Length: 610
Image (tube, rainbow, N blue to C red; front, side, top):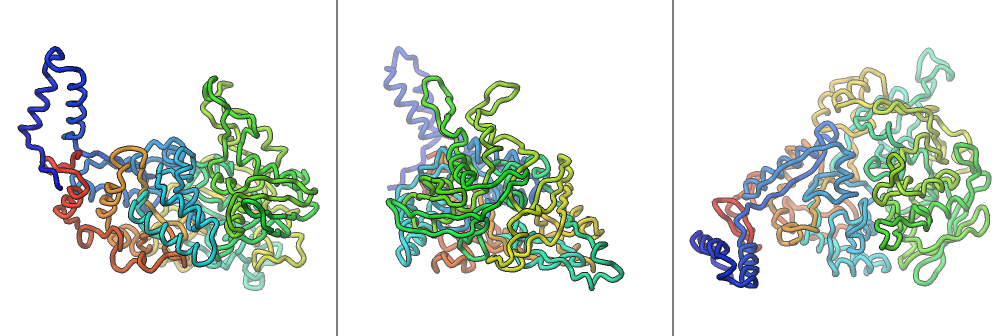
């Protein structure tokens, strides 16, 4: 039954009673009256959306501002706070200091198993992209467990139910899949369309223009440097592959650090540095025997062995290597996992070195196709990272519970990847050169598909940073660089089209924009509130107005994959949380009715407490 709205006279009467002397009312009565007034709060609902600045991202701030406008129309006091990429990720992923945020999560979360670390209640206090929303749903936990261990139709059914529950309870609101738009020059390198440049494989798939097509030059005179321009300065100041706030993607660090496996264009994991792997049944999860080639080395010449592989997984699980960190003398020492890869390293229960080229992995309860995801973490040299297990400190004073491994800038980096670090100028530039001893250069008959098997088509990769999309496009047009390494906004498409020397490369990204909610705090702890907020957002309007049509509206993070069930397909509107309005115009009365149905009320047009 709907409770009648509280009249102003009744509310004043309650406040008058609270002012009565304690000699008249018992303390128990006073506590009860305070509880009643708390439920009858007249304070307007107030929310803050954190996101990045317009220079850092062409769409995020515009999304946040439009969402805030819709929320304000519904009577919610909404503010938007822009900040740097680094600060946003620090506040959201490390400190959980937010109410809502607009961001573009990494591409790897667009797989069914990624839901486990993204939403399982066991990760509500973890850092990184391990449940940053603080979302807890026991039904979802069971479905997450099922999709890990099941196969065939049973797994597909579990993933479908997961998406339905997520779309209803809204730990985050999916906005849409944006196109990656880039300006490129094809006079020196080609094959720009083969792979996404949000991945290191995009750079490795490039091919050098045939020397015969460059008139008047010899092979020695041809340009062998690949020039990249970015509007993100973070890579020039920090090359730590474990750093949450500095690594939105692995496009550059994965060129420095090999992993055992890689993700092709399909949803699977194939061997990369690993020569082979073989799975067998185990208890509770599968066992994998992984072999790596002989005579591998790190960039500094130190041999890379199975011991480094085993070290990597032990280190990612606990960067103190068992030493622990005490927050309080009375507390037990705590482990400190690497947040960027915790969801993947947690799949591994044990790693044993069998011989210098063989490692045995034992996994938690899951299917082999899920376990293989653990093979995509960067391999770390033991002789470098084993010295970074101590608590992080400033001026010799320990700070927080992070280890040096998580806060080091890691310059110069030492990996085993196809490129080696040369130099950096913080905030300005970065340079790599090819690693002659990399396995790509030594394989006579690589099982990797061409052109990846051929290794880098360039001898040097130079990165320069600028402050805007427009400047980045201008640098490519002038021939100073070959490609905009970070995607530019749709507003740059006409500019690119006007230049004969530029090619426009548009590729549907695997990364989508979200409005994330902090479900740890009121009122966002209430799924009915989050569901109603989602109905105030018109994804179709955002695709047209903000993305200029270069995006696809989304209901689920698995939109565009074979895992999306038919009833979550976008059909002119969101099938679960349809917009309460038309063509971007919110129907305020419908919005108010939706909040009233959720148990909230209005006071002078402002949404207030229950």
